Image (cartoon, rainbow, N blue to C red; front, side, top):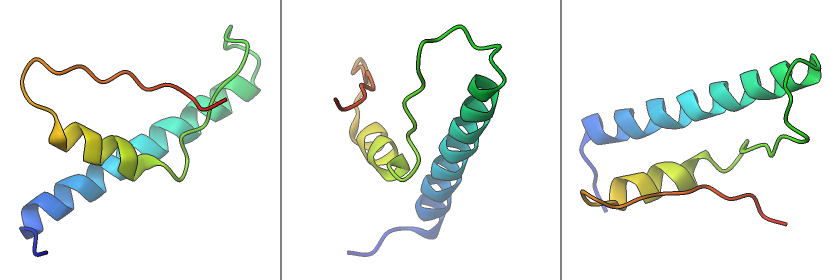
Length: 68
């Protein structure tokens, strides 16, 4: 299946943004300033969120939930 280069670039940038955010969240949690009991890392699963987000239509909601 062929995909437009612009879409592939947008998907890559979104995955990269998700990874960077996750890494920053983990660093912040390790400082002890975060009041959350735990942090569930998304590293390695960025494509799932990007793919699900692209499949959404107007009015759809996406709620991420960590695996147990």
